[in-house]
Image (cartoon, rainbow, N blue to C red; front, side, top):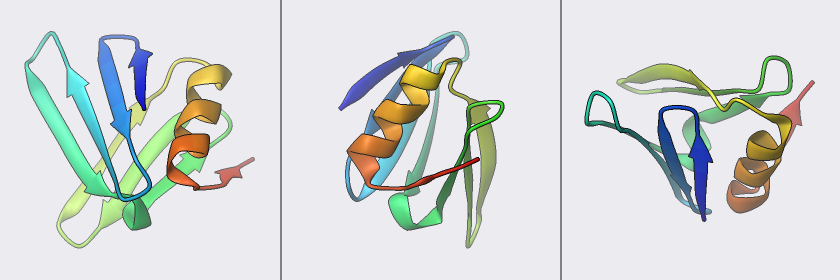
Length: 76
């Protein structure tokens, strides 16, 4: 599933998440097992092994779409 976020897009599957930031031409990638979704302020956090980054998803709709695509529950 491809989700448009401020500044780029998120490509999310049951196995991995890629965040492509257009302005910097930067791609962040992680396995689904290493992500946490926070309901306020709509954040995707990747933390596992050598991966450690976070990004705002902008809206509740984007957060719900990533949750649905990955099967990861949202922490509120």
